Amino acid sequence: MFLADGGGGGTSPRPSYSGTQTLKIDPASIPGALAAFRVAHDRVAKKVDELTGIDIRPWANDEVSGETAKQFEQRSTGGGADSAIKCLVGYRDQLKQACDSLQGAFDAYTAMEGDNSALWGTHG
Image (cartoon, rainbow, N blue to C red; front, side, top):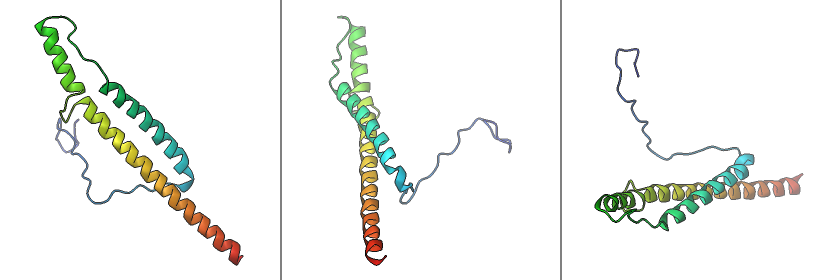
């Protein structure tokens, strides 16, 4: 990327996040958002299960396919921080947290609206 100040070719600085992150959402849109996050969570959880059960074997009885299978296993189901399974498990867990947060927000909103309706009904 060429910058107007004469720089170029460098990478853009990453955004810095500090403190508590919040998301404001219209309460009426919570059920739709929650449904979308649940679908995504279920799909990712299914992929985690599929990847966990994958049988990785050498394709031929030779040194090359043996080493290839070993490398493939390490990158997909191995314990490394950048393995596919670790990434998917992390993503699945984040989706679960989002679902739980949305459900909690919806429950709080519903309780508050119920209390407000009751107040208006008794004073109106």
